[in-house]
Length: 286
Ligand SMILES: C[S@@+](CC[C@H](N)C(=O)[O-])C[C@H]1O[C@@H](n2cnc3c(N)ncnc32)[C@H](O)[C@@H]1O
Image 1 (cartoon, protein in one colour):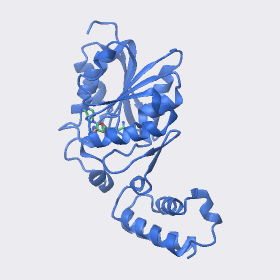
Image 2 (image 1 turned 90 degrees about the vertical axis):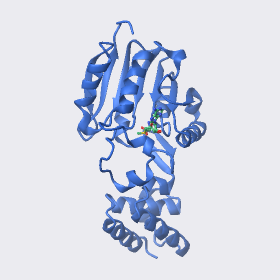
Image 3 (image 1 turned 90 degrees about the horizontal axis):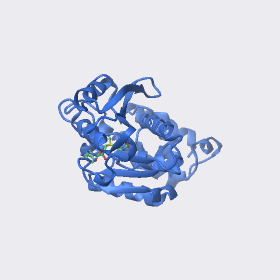
Image 4 (image 1 turned 180 degrees about the vertical axis):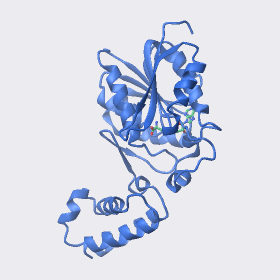
């Protein structure tokens, strides 16, 4: 079977099913089945029948809106290929900008301590450890399935040995680091209960990774309190939020941190949408 014919049929099928990027997804799945890079597809004369069957079966699943990353088993994030699947949140490109900000805040600190709250696959923790070799990184995740994916990713990467994974709630986590942390970073669940999300998200991302209560900010509240406790004076917090929460999260920090977090700023992602709030721990006593 000619690759072009296979890909055109698959892309048509995926477009009909409402998949947002049908051509890209079809090419990614075919490259995955053949074990080659996407760019090599154009050099291919023919796809063996067995591979074509496997490919069509994957396209069927994608048409049922199973996430692309669950079908390939991999999510690219910064310089990493992370293992993902049922039970863990698929890391999003928006979050890569938050990692960039964390790295910018580590410059000039000899052995920085970074805590990733709500770690999921360990995407943020591992990316920071990978790109900041002097950092000591802690990752906290409550859900057992997600923590198992995090463990797998940390064990698969050399920088994973510099990440301490804590399986538990962020509330009260890591008391031994109180007042000693340089950067607290978090991508918590922040979608308001009942909000509409794409089928891939609703049916395949774990509920604990998505829903944040009536206003979406239940876990963000715990992140703020935990950051106040963990950060050293001058240490910084970066917390991701939905694009509609660019005013709500700074306001929440202002209302709940009682002056212990200042220099509030809200920052955009690569699409220019409000994406994360940053703050600095003040000297005021806790
Ligand atoms: C949106 S996902 C983010 C995962 C990862 N940091 C990323 O950016 O891809 C949020 C994660 O927070 C975890 N979580 C939710 N509430 C938590 C809590 N109270 N304590 C610890 N982890 C929590 C969920 O299980 C989920 O893995």
